[in-house]
Amino acid sequence: MTIQSFRILQAGLKQLYQYNPVELIKIFCLMLLQKMLSGIGLLLLLPLLQLMGGGDVKGSDTVSRLMSSLSDSVGIETDFISIISIFLVLLLLATAIDYIVEVRGARLRHHYTHYLRTKIYRQVLYSQWRYLRQKRSTEINHTLAIQIRSISNATHLILASIASTISLGVLIFLSFSVSWSMTLITLFAGALFVLCLWPYFRISQENGNKELVNYREIFNSLSDQLRFLKMIKSHQHEESFLSDIEKSSEKLENQSVIAISIQSRTKWVYKMGAALFFVIILSLSHFWLQIPLEQLILLLIIFSRILPQVSALNNGVQRLFRLVPVYDDIHRLQLECDHVQEKPDRGEEIKFNETITFNDISFRYPNSKINVLTGLSFKLKKGQLCLVTGDSGMGKSTLVDILAGLLVPSDGEFSVDSTLITPENMLSWRRNICYVSQETYLLNDTLYRNLNPDNEPIEDDAIWNALRLAAADGFVNALPEKLQTLLGENGVSLSGGERQRIALARAIIRQVPLIILDEATSALDAQTEQKIHDSLLQLRGKATFVIISHRPGDKMLADIKLELQ
Image 1: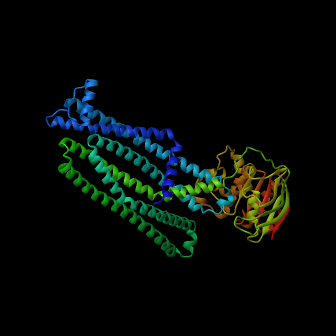
Image 2: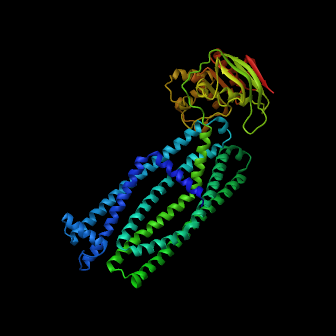
Image 3: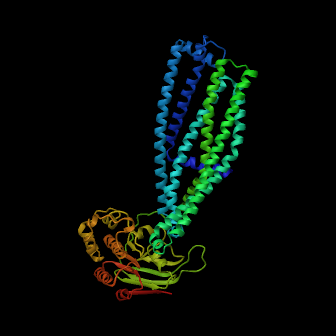
């Protein structure tokens, strides 16, 4: 356990506080009030024990003096019925406040989890494309789906640890009011007890690091394999890939067993220490301190309340240190995304009325000394169709990413009409573009939602016209629920060609001035491809197209041909 670990937990607590400081302070105050009421109720046991023993509450101890003073000032009789009635009222109030704290704490925890997940996903969505293309999507998915849930558990542990700390403070104060000498001995013994448990915090954090690595490994492996189930089955790789998962799963479960053994060992040390503690307390009170019986009983009751709080606090802190790697990983993702955030949209409207110009454009990726594109220049007029060809690795996708406002050129200028496209206005420029890739993405939703992912108000006639231009109206009409047909995960119920036609129809529906097709017709047969060509001819002049393709038929449509070498 290092200072860095404390700083990570402190940063997590600070972020929780900044989310809703007012609610957190309210919960803290309610916790304090609940513990104080419970503590006062405990103190009332002393006069009750004195009365039950046949004595009175006029003793020389601090609690008896306070009771006598309160009785004289308020005018309440210090008889058994009065004291036990106050005792009952205090306990009922403490129970009611405890219920309120539980409910408000759970609401705060879940709202904070929702806020944190949404905040991080927003940071990811608005990060620069050059960063996202290098980041594994499964790692981001693991963070948003699994690790954020762990933060919810950590928030619960933080609130529980705060409650245990408040309770300990109140109980120690009560113990001092009964017997300061015995309390000092108890605190000394407790400090030795914490020192004995100190190494387990470091072990818990190391175990948390290994668990995080193992969880991410199995999550990434499963995500990758499930994407390629068809390939696995067709090549009979089931046993080989199953073996990989078994190894990852075994490592993960072994790490979980180690975590449980650490917790069990800590509990064993705690129980042994508690037994020795009670023996020492009883021996000291009998042979040395000579504490009156009723005070000794109250002290034992207080100490019996302190020990579970110490155990709960130790368990909570140990589990928190086990989650330090999760906090650190999430914080690192947030910092990475903060450093690569895109410039906010300034609301500037960029219109494409005349010409797109690439002037001496060069591009190289970070940490690379070789240019992907070098000195590329061309002009594309509105309504034209530009065909981009070239061998693999020649920069076709990079060219398209620059054109789509996803990448910033290393050198040169990219302008639309008289407007220079820069990081400050890239988001505005993207409103003019629709990008259709070879790998079509479809939502696990209805066909209508896939054609209109933003749920914009669109007439059915416009949708069917787009489907017709994409040569998709025929098979859509044959679907059981037409536009309301559920497509399944990534359109599993459709063929590759049908998925591409849906993506093309989606682009046409948006009615943007620039449509980019990146091998978007690669899965089409010759007859369907001809229908798409006929549609492109109909759209000629209404939209500008940039097509990456090696198909001979596309060359016949092109106004401009760019061959990257």
